[in-house]
Length: 267
Image 1 (cartoon, rainbow, N blue to C red):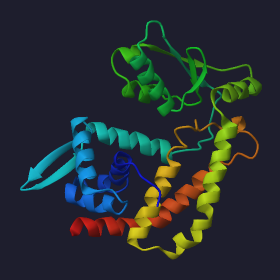
Image 2 (cartoon, rainbow, N blue to C red; image 1 turned 90 degrees about the horizontal axis):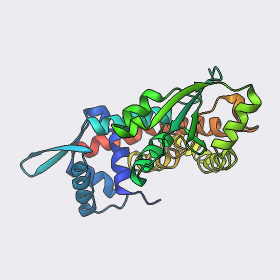
Image 3 (cartoon, helix red, strand yellow; image 1 turned 30 degrees about the horizontal axis):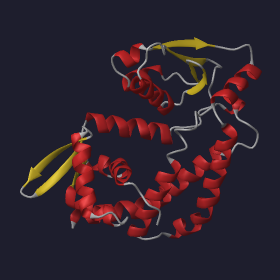
């Protein structure tokens, strides 16, 4: 079993399961589920306390039982993340780029990091200097992620180049598609052989373990992949095949994993 960071596992459990049952989970349920992955109860308690203090969760207490609830901040994170992971490969592109021009003058290191993290999260690629590009219009989502002075540091432009050769140059400059394609192929080689087992069914505990491993392995790709239109992708691109494999594996494991989570909640 691969190691899973407690914080990441918490968000994955809420994103895959608890968000669909009201957004709340008892600490005891979280402790039992995370024990499946070798995480100690004390570590779970510390992780949830820190996440609450950081503003990601609200909590209530009844007797000795603490329940952690998604709030506006965590709901938004899960919604944005799910959109980026599942809603991909839309080919209707009118060759219009969204350019984010960052005013880097006198930017503090922390401010620069916040802006660059948000740009990367929403699929912008760094072209050169202060210029970032995306083939999608995600200005609204980016501005919602940034607040105050951070948002005011970005000037958004809509532009078209002289033709596809120039568009491909932008894509090549902004993203390392060769490396990403190699990593997509590695993902396919890891999970394609598992399909036959998934189709036969694994049982609840094993299905949960496999599904969390699948999600944690795949979710890093959409945040490196700008979801370029097909005309900008290199020959033999494996991103779409990897995405389709992810969706198939994710769906095959759904029923058994969900049943295991529900049974754990009822214990």
